[in-house]
Image (cartoon, rainbow, N blue to C red):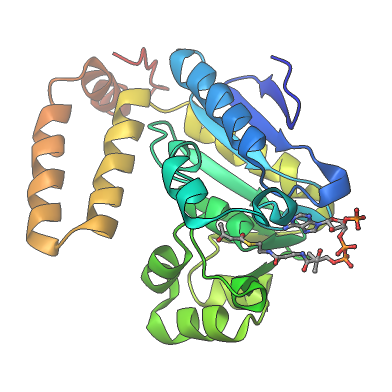
Length: 258
Ligand code: CAA
């Protein structure tokens, strides 16, 4: 797959998307998100792919929405083009596990893109921020909604109202980041984790992802009901039978994604 704004490759059962607009610190243009959407469509359609990683460069995961691309927008331009909803949200609708491997700047839409993924692995050099206020605008890719859910209202307000950047240690401490890794080995270590995930049963991974997202997006009772229904449904999956049989027979399971 050849794209203008991203590089796409597979590493075994892992699909890798590398944001590739180095001159603009991977600023997130409309075209870039069209490319990401097409790559995700292809990885989701490919039975051999069990986990997807999105990464950037060592200096920048992404420095936010492309400011030059939107500087002349009026309200009607943004509204009629369905800006952000049209293509950015494809990332949040991905059904397969999705890891953001973040090195350097993850600002504005870059931080929001990372939060659309299921978890963020950060290099020790990573810096997260929502600096939109400095441009006279607010976060529009989910920052005011996903940040408070990840780190609580006070920290989210601190980031959005002051434009302060936080480093990887603070981001992990407040729950935004799942793991911190050395910058030099971030991608390879992330791919090892993704490859481990991809060895599990894909339908069960998708059920777990749906269920955790339901917790994130709804109340406890609704979430528990959703989990219980998915848990019951998992008894109809061949891989559930295989996983339990393999444990009892002291052997490695042979999952068939069925
Ligand atoms: N959009 C367009 N171009 C960008 C960009 C962006 N978000 N961020 C960086 N660039 C470009 C710069 O214009 C510069 O281009 P030129 O070489 O042609 O001048 C190039 O990338 C390198 O950037 P800097 O020279 O600024 O690099 P630096 O190391 O001095 O600073 C930085 C790095 C702190 C990340 C700085 O570039 C910066 O502050 N970028 C903007 C961050 C920002 O405001 N992001 C929010 C965007 S709005 C948004 O995302 C809305 C939303 O919620 C959806």
